[in-house]
Length: 342
Figure (cartoon, rainbow, N blue to C red):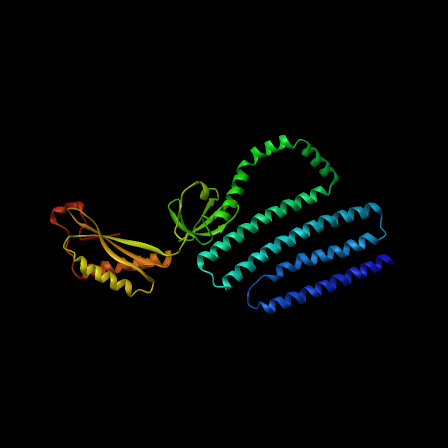
């Protein structure tokens, strides 16, 4: 009679807990409507844990052979360890989503938001590794044979530690580099970086590698230690604002004042200019031609690229309109035919 009562009670406990959980999540969803938070990811592990609790109660009071009961309790113990680990992993992912969403809602700047996103993502991945290691260790320790082997290994921990240290040196170096990236943050999610002479945006940071997305949709997979051991360019380290240049090589007959006025007119009317820098400078002069550099600024690298391309195009059109004269005839083949633009 007792097992039937316990089974019924466990079943009712599961139903009640499941109903309360659904009600609680429904209330939270209503208070955070349209936030897109993945509440559903927590349901399955919580249901599994409630189910394991109920089944454990039934097995404990059920009249079954001792060997079968011991085997069932062992299996339920392993299931409980796996269920708790699963719930923790889902909880970390949910917390990451919640923190990032709440952080965006308070209106923080782009740099600060990317710093938080990088920190939270790397911390979650580190915690995931620790939880998985602890869960696997806990499952193995439920077996008597493994536990005895573990005690034997601990008895010779000195030698084992040295051997494992040499064997896992590269892995430990990579893990430490990931922790350094999380703390120092020389590179963050969505940063614009130059890696191996390629400019791209950081798409993903893991504990072992960084994915950089290039403008043509290619991806460069870079070991995370690369960002610790080597110098690299980070265009958005402290600000997304950038200054770019358009270089022109023109003959001495080019009216620099008119060209400067045209540059200011072009840039001041352009919606991508952030109103910080617009300047035309004579940066060099040789016998055949003089070199001009037009400086412009924009809010980010994408806007700057577009702005530079359009400024270059319109300056070429202006120079052709005014009939730019070629450089000195003595220039020969060493100078530009009419004007040169970079």
